[in-house]
Length: 102
Image 1 (tube, rainbow, N blue to C red):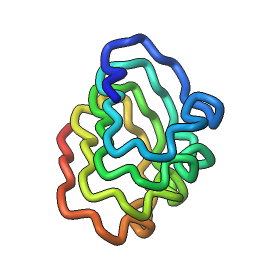
Image 2 (cartoon, rainbow, N blue to C red):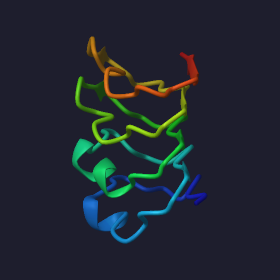
Image 3 (cartoon, rainbow, N blue to C red):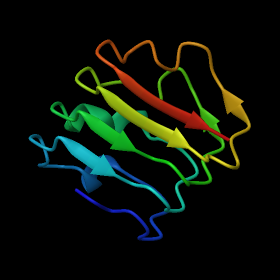
C-alpha cells in the first residue's frame, strides 16, 4: 500500500483496521511526527515498512511493537529526529534490511 506524499499527520489503529494481509506499507514523505505502537499489531503480515522523509521526533523502545514479521525498514532522512531509544529494534526478530541516514 503506497501512501507516500499524502500529507498524513498521524496513523491510528482505525487507519489500518482490516488490513491483516498487508505485506508492504509506504508512508514516505508525509507529516508523521510519531509512530503509534498500538496500530502495528493490526498488521501481522507486514514485511516492509518505509517511514522515511517524515518529521518524526522520537523513536521509543515500543515504536515497532507488533512487527514480528517485518524484514525491511527504511528510516532514511528523519530530519527532525531528536531521540532514538535503546531497544527500539528489539521486537524486529526477522529484520534483514535496515536503512538509516540523517
